[in-house]
Length: 413
Image 1: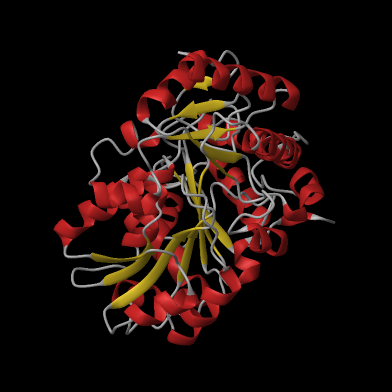
Image 2: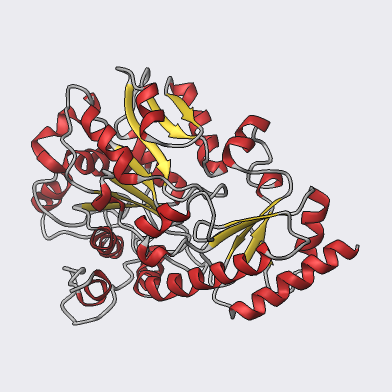
């Protein structure tokens, strides 16, 4: 089966014997066992089962299995949020004195996290764009991973995954990709050379702005050298799954970064309609980008699938059917003009999220990046007059009419 069919017909909930097509919501903290010996075996990882929802929950496990299947991975670990997923994915292998290489174009929360890691002796070396040449230029003995957003938010720059992966694999360094804005509906990074894939399930996976969550998917193919990555050495008996084994049995469990069962259930529901939603949102985003690119009131429009753009060719080659995702950005010439446009919109909601069924708009420079430095804002593409548009499921013609009217009003004020 194609993966869309497999997500609907696969068997992902081994604990259910009722024939239910969706997992039950196990909204409980603890699970009783038949004997003290059984509970001991579960705690010491000598028997499968559930003891406490911080370390494992049947509803969450059902979501994790679906996400592993969606990305073509070997295993997945669900987290309380997308930011928790990024933190756990990195700290699982990083120690004081280590370095990582990252594109400068990052979500503001990720930038803040990398700044926080400096206090733990972990340094991030930024490059303007994540290219093979840029990565090779910064490699050192201290480099332990390369990180990037497949479609950066809000700069909308794409990573040529296959090209970068050839460098990282040759150097024995894992490539960790945040694929939140691309989604498995458009690309499966593991198939192109990534080693670990991260999603904020809050966004397109759940899809309706009703659940917070994150997930880490392990491809199970990276040749981990436990001498080079000492945190994994204790778990090298796990072989290809040493990364996930350490993550689940150690760091993730000890930090308490678990996903709530209710959020896992809502994420399962969203995952089942992901492809249909993303296809519709991408088509509308392209139509809106094309219309606004012709609007004299708009200074600049960026969208990966827009003809003539810097990443158009890579989008056609790397993303399914050349769809460029569901986010576009506008530049208006000034912060004041951007705010006027936002305040004249009638359909779009002024809110900080992406991937919702409703179209959402925000000026990232003055919100998400409010406490970032000027250099960080420039690197992320968060310019003072830039508006990020997360396109929803509204009719494309209605969105075009709404933005066109708001742009006209912006110019008239």
